[in-house]
Image 1 (cartoon, rainbow, N blue to C red):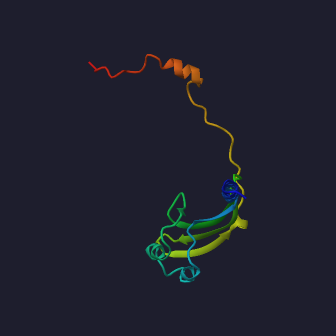
Image 2 (image 1 turned 90 degrees about the vertical axis):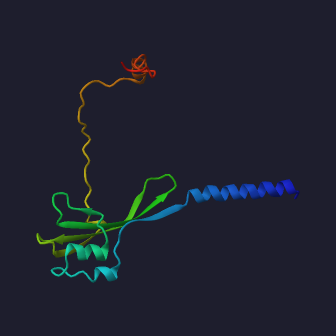
Image 3 (image 1 turned 60 degrees about the vertical axis):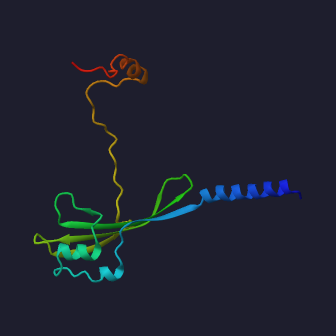
Length: 151
């Protein structure tokens, strides 16, 4: 085998390895999953919001209408090549506080506890009309101020 053929084979093998590596399954960890030893230290009725935040860090989300519920969310997702992400598992810790800011309850939710949400396909109508690309292009001719000083 001559030198040129060796380089061709090596180059071909290298390119095929790169292409196959691009199609490999990718598993990604997302969010903030508190360590089990830290979660075991949570004591409802004894700790304040500040204590919990010092132990677990900032929550991923809080309740929408008040600050009485904190959520720590983590998930493992996978993606194969160009296909959409697929969620392997999800863990949510929901911490409730009373009106004095004392930890009242800690609950754990998994992927099985989730419920699908139906997204509405309706759109809010806007005033005016939609212009085509050509109408927008032609409609702007003459509207551009070429840096003329304003009087």
